[in-house]
Image: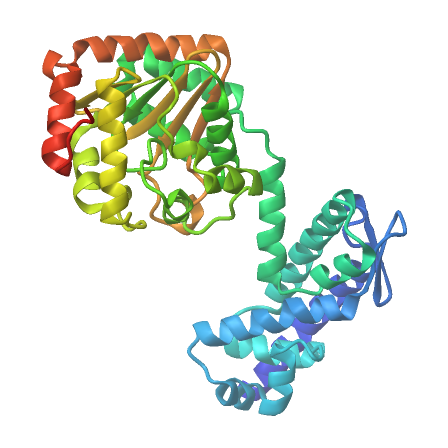
Length: 408
C-alpha cells in the first residue's frame, strides 16, 4: 500500500514536472536575451552558446547534495532510500549526469521536498543565467570566458551576478528614503534621529559595494568634512586594515575594485584634509588601547596604533583637525557630512542575519541635504561640554590613553 502511494505520487509529480520542464525548454527567459533550443542556449545576438545539459547539471546536482546534507544523510543513505546506486547518486551530485524524472521524484520524496522545488530552481537559475550572460556580454567578455563562467557553480554565478548588480547601482539613496532621513533630522536632531535613520537603513540600505563606493567618493571631494562617530564602524576608521574592517562589517561581501585601490594606498585613513570630528570617547579609547576599530574585526599592530595616535595628536595640536571626544551619547549611527554635497550614514546595528548583510547604510546627495545635516551638526557641536572640544584637553587625553606626546 505504502509503495503504491509513493508510486502514485511520483507519477503525478512526474507528469506535472515534465510538463513544466517541456515548457521551460521551449522558451526560457526569452525576455532577458536568451532562448533555449533543444540542448543549447543561444544568445539572441549570436554571441554565447553553451550546452543546456551542462548548466542543468550544475543546478540540480548541488541542490541534491545541499538538501542531503541538511537532512544529515550520507550518500549511501539517500541512495538506498531512493532506490538507486550510490555511484549513480554521486554522479548526479557532481553534475556528471541528469536524473530521470522518476529518479528525481524518488530523491525528492526522501529529502522531503517536491519535484516542483527542483523545477523552480531550474526556472530561477535559468533567469539568473540569462541576466548573468547578458551582463557578461555587455562587459565585453569573450565567448570562451562566458562559457567557462556559465558552467560554474550556482553559488559562483549568483555571487558574481550580485556583485555586478551592486557595481551598477549608483550610490544615491532614493528620494523617499532621502525625505525620510531629512525629516528625522529636522524633527529630532542628529542623536535622537538615530532610531528613525536605522529604520530607513533597514528598509533601503545599500550593498557594501555601493556604500563604500559612495563613501570613497565623498572622502575624495574637496572641502570640510564633518564626522559623527558614535559606534565602531567603517566611517572614521583609523587603522591600516580598512579592507579587513569592511569585510568584518559586511560579512565578506565583495569590494568594488576602485574602492579597494583607494584603500590600498591609504587614502581613506589619512588625516591631511580639513575635517571636524565628534567621536564617542569609548570608541576611540578602545581603538587606542586594543587596536580594534570594529568588534570582531582586524586588530592594528601596537606600533601602528601609536603612530596613528601621534599623527592625530600633532594634527589636533596644529589645528589641522578639529576634534571633540565626548561621553555625551551620540546615538547608534555614524555620519560623514561633506559640506558641499553628500551625507553618508552608516549603521552597524542590523548585521545579525544573512538577509540583512546588504543593509550597510544610506547616502544622501545634494547641497540641501548636506546643509540640513551640517546645521544640526553645528547644534550638536556647540552643545558639547567645552572641555570635550578644547584642543589642549583632547590632546592631553589622547596622550594619556595612548602613551605618546605631542611633537615639539
